[in-house]
Amino acid sequence: MSSEASKPDSTNDLHSSNAIDQFEIIEQLTKDFNDLTEKAQQLLTEKLFLENEYSQLKKRVNRLDEELNNIRTPPLVVGHIQDIVDEQAVVRSSNGTVFLVSINMRLDSNLLKPGARVALNQDSLSIVEVLSDSWDPLVSGSEIIDSPSVSYDSIGGLDDQVNELRQTIELPLEKPDEFIRFRIEPPKGVLLTGPPGTGKTMLAKAVASSTNATFLGLVGSELAQKYIGEGGRMVRELFDLARQKSPSIIFIDELDSIGSRRLDTATSGDREVQRTLMQLLSEMDGFEPIGDVKIIAATNRPELLDPALLRPGRFDRIIEIPIPDSSSRESIFAVHTKNMPLSKDVDLRKISAISDGFSGAEIRSAVIEAAIISISNGKRRTSNKHFIEAIQKIKSNKSQNDGSQSQGLYS
Ligand code: ATP
Image (cartoon, rainbow, N blue to C red):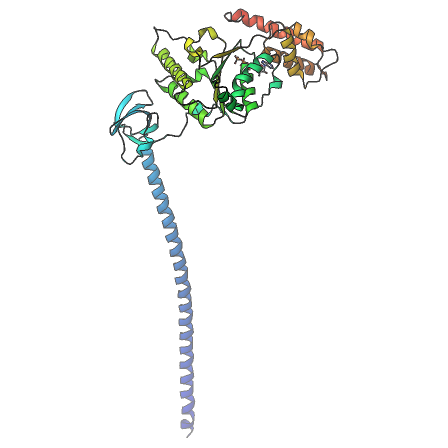
């Protein structure tokens, strides 16, 4: 009886221990499942990250491949179209040689005009790109973006010359209708002649600033180029830019460097300079109406100029700017000392009397020198004595230079 009574107990124990085991197994499996799910999630994130990195690296490889290809491709030669013959073009490459080459068919034929700047394949020299619309850096750099700040008030002793220049350049720009009414053609160009430092550049800048015209300033020697046709092209571009930015004033300083008398016995360099001059003459004759583009040129050596430049319709007004006389020197001294603290004893008339032969530029140097002398002596004002000392210093520099340099035309 007692053994029967104990039987159900052991069966119960067995059942309960089985249940515990199963519970533990389920718990373990759940834990494993959770761990694996978490790990799978991590691996998924890692996969996404690596995929992203892979695509980044692939892009980089493509970019580097492209760069490598660019480095390996030979450069294109830059040239200019001279003529179009049927489906081919006559081009002058940048080293000066002329070729008849083929044209890439996908290029817009309207852009392929004589004078256009193009890129040429290095081997076949065929035109692969049109690079027009870009000005030569020398030409685009000639534009003085801010209208020059020189006013007529800052020019001393040149009243007659200022008046003449205003009549010739300013009046036609300001009252073009009046010139049409009177049926007269305004002068196209004015030539300023005179010794160095007498204010020729200043005058041109003053006209530009008083008319609000674009000022395109170049030195003639910049137009004298090494390669055949380059100078002429630059002159053409200069006038094109001036027309585009009109009203404008082209100022060519040192005109003699491209405008010298043409000689029969000329070297190839001279001939290139002459071609540049011819281009200047033809631009001035104006196959296209010159409109409100005015030309001011300056030279210290007018006797060297080609007479063709001085014919009517070109530089037909010549304004001579001489070395200032005593009263002009006084005006120039007054301009340059206007804002300077001066002692009461300063007499500009006497100072100008002792600076005989000084150009405007030398007067400005004398004023600067006098101010430096007073500052170095610890003075608050510049006195007569400082001016006399400064003028003597400039005079002795001048006589040393005159001795070492060839006698100038105007000396
Ligand atoms: P270059 O022939 O050497 O080019 P330039 O005749 O063009 O000389 P500028 O460059 O106009 O001379 O003048 C040089 C400087 O001299 C000017 O910046 C100005 O300070 C001074 N100067 C010359 N003439 C005058 C003047 N009449 N009034 C005031 N300043 C002057």
